Image (tube, rainbow, N blue to C red; front, side, top):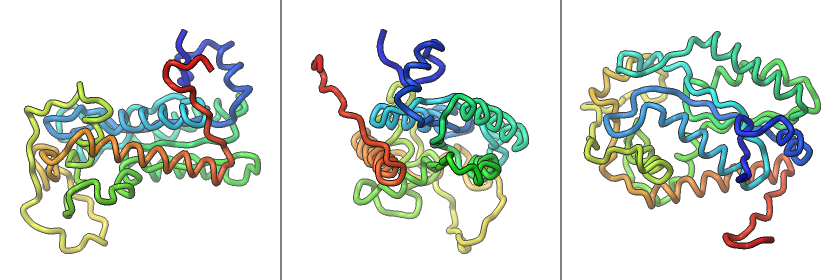
Length: 257
């Protein structure tokens, strides 16, 4: 049987053996919401899950339960979007976290693919802040990808827009079979945001009819691969430098070592 890092794919006895070698659990969280006509509704969740798997392979952690959907109220008029009330999200995540702490995890890394989940995760973690032997961190997935874009993507204000060049490139790399390239459609707002420093509560449909903000036509698999690789390297570096989790010595393909 192939080695898995996913908790849901382990037997309880396999879990016990894995747990002997790590105190790190990675919890993916995301959303199910409009991502243009060319990308799957679960793009946020798919990003979080794949980053969690890639990081776990590098450092030996266990990937815990995925929270598939989050608070997507701002996109709720688009068909297929699932919205979870903040209270429900926090209660569910809190119960998951309590169980994982019960089984001995002391290092908890959230890899979150949806901006709307960021404050909710913060609130769930807050009660644990005074527990001295527990460590928590949250990776805001698309924001991390944005920080790794140096000379990879086309310059411009909409490079990291919703379902745009960055997101489409990443999905082309990670899940090419889920990207319908025949449906790629560029769309940008017809006016500039004159006050970007002010948080506004407009619905996405006031900016886009397709769920796209940006230029997905500029996306490529190579760009996505570069963004993902740099993002995973950054997370692994954080875990190594800050939490002193040494990267695994991965076996080379075809090696029996």
